[in-house]
Image: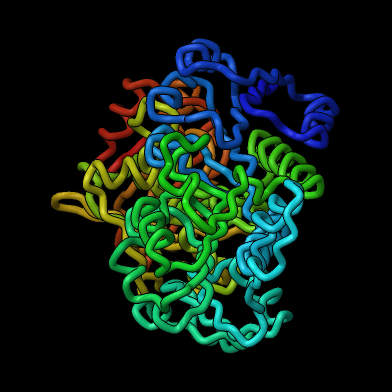
Length: 528
């Protein structure tokens, strides 16, 4: 039975799904202090938060059972993603659920700031009729600068274009082709600032975007620019913007987010010509319903191991339904990794992977993560998965590269990997038979077809008469049954490689007896 803790308010649609999940129990406990949260978290497999709960490294360390942290929303800056990755905890968000709500809020702020909606309302509510005092500005014909051209930035663009605005955008991760398809010119910031009549922020908060709107940036802008921020408060140097508003350099601002929430001693509060809202970007009935429902569905799927969509710390992209397609190949790669670790005669320092075939080439990052998990699982004592395996491998000094030309056999959708250690290396190749059954088809320069499962005796021997009989006799004497025996050789009379699946693990005495066979040159016992 999975246990889920909901530590922030979550919409009824999500709670209903949790109520209906027969394999899950949940508790909703909001307003917990850090110590209170840490005290109860060891009892839970998943934690669902919004923006109030701070899942820092200490909190995550307390969650000894924790497998998933779900952020019902877009930003995950209240979660220590690096610490989660180190512990193999999946961090998920809901990047699309509130996109329309946030885009509409940005347009509302843009319009309200342009037409002095709030001060005009307040004046009229107080009995004043001052039409001439609130002459505003039209969006039509103006240039909108969009910083961050992701999902929300593009939705805002569509709505701004409907108002007759020309749109330019800055996003170093978006191609010019995407911009052309939407009728948008992608520019650098130094070109966006002086050209834009309006600037709206829709980028994630990172060290690179911290205070991307600052005194230097504002100095480059047009006099009378209007700035809207519905993304993250720390994208703006709030004191610099307040100073620019007071000086008239910035005509108005629409602010929905703040560097600290609720804002305390914030210079923008009370500054002239600022429209304030208390982080309402996602606050629509429709968005709240979708955020809650999608988050719970994602967390339950992750706990059940059926899907990992919108996992922000996966070392590979997982879209809706993708995991079920890649999962069999990841299972094969993990078995290859465990076999490599068992065959290595030293500490593995380098891993090379090659994916040949349409079904695996596009999934090579997922395959590489699973391969590393398999390699590390032979001696790593903590929880290990595809989230933290690449992190731990890097810490151990294991390099991972994608290569070409490694394989020498012709199979569709072949996964090949070569590991290296001081003084040696090993190449393995694997495929899925029927799209589901993992098989080893290459061990160094030998080809064969073997099942990578259970207890496996891998033996290299001189290809001379009587070896198979001797092996069988010794194993029988020690009451070890052979389940399957696969052999590969390059030419008669040279050397052969045997891949022997056993029904039980042979004793040290049995292995000593096998090693004593004159024709046997190498013997390895691996359990997968």
